[in-house]
Image 1 (cartoon, one colour):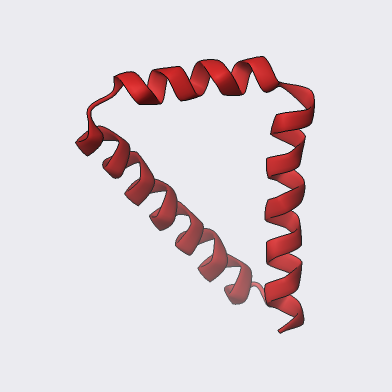
Image 2 (cartoon, rainbow, N blue to C red):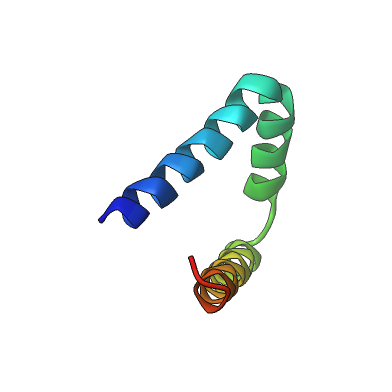
Length: 64
């Protein structure tokens, strides 16, 4: 459970950093996403999920 809370906290820190340090970049990125076809956005989402799973797998292999 503590590992889950740690992961959630880290995600919140990184998300907050984007909003705090580069809000205009975030707005431009959202505009680009709105102009992309839905299938492309889904593919990007799937790739991010796979990359996250790989990182979690690597973390457990080196002994979190």
